[in-house]
Image (cartoon, rainbow, N blue to C red):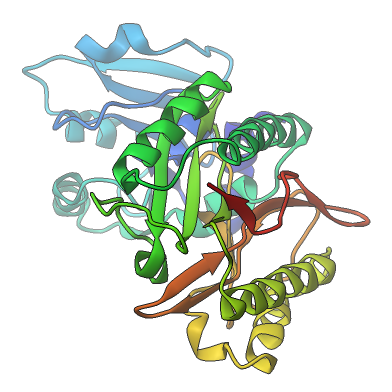
Length: 359
């Protein structure tokens, strides 16, 4: 069954009259079209029953690849009101309407004003049910993205580190990702020495020195599917505390990996990693969730975090990335993407997981 048809089946089952998808990953997931983030409204109108319509600015319509068996394209002209065009394609004006989370507020407010009797809600509780479970083609795409990122991680073991600044290395990582097959680079975190204690550090002009541990977290897109991996590099001699922390981190990631399987609650994977780190005395230094889902977005459902009791299922893909961050001194993180099979978790990142000593 095609994706829009599956969504319509969900809408009908939940008593939702229509789903409205604008900016964000839901739109290309269901229609194949990446809307430009313009002030002009692009919106897929997906009713529970009947024809789906992609409302798109007339000047953008040539960019849409037609799918007449799934949805009709409705270009709107500069003098038309696109909100009214959307409303005209709704099956009813007083039903439940699910709206994509990243729809611009200006359009949601307009829709609410025009559809005063409708009940608006987030589309994510429905769309996530489809997007969380990857089919074979999606897993293949994620695997290719992971392999591309792995090739970069291996190449990083042989570059010069000492005497270069973080921005320079980050730029090189981005270039390598493209050389290894990425269509787009999303991020390339390079956090050296004490900067490593900031999990989402923005690369700076800080010069990497001997004795530093450098956290490299990078990813992008290959054929619309994302990569995301983290490896760490020690410049010269490895401090004893860092070496001990790295051993703990590897054990924590492995514990989470072995726990991940269909039927296990997402929070149990987080607990498995956190328990190892806490027992070693580093508990207060693990400050984020153990993982996040990945697919057409770098961060999507399911989230591997305490409080998420949702059972994991076959086809779900997510990161396992415990970290230890000692403020003012160092940070380390180890991240692989996994996908669940009937037998457990399969790693989609397979570059070496040691703390690589570089020059």
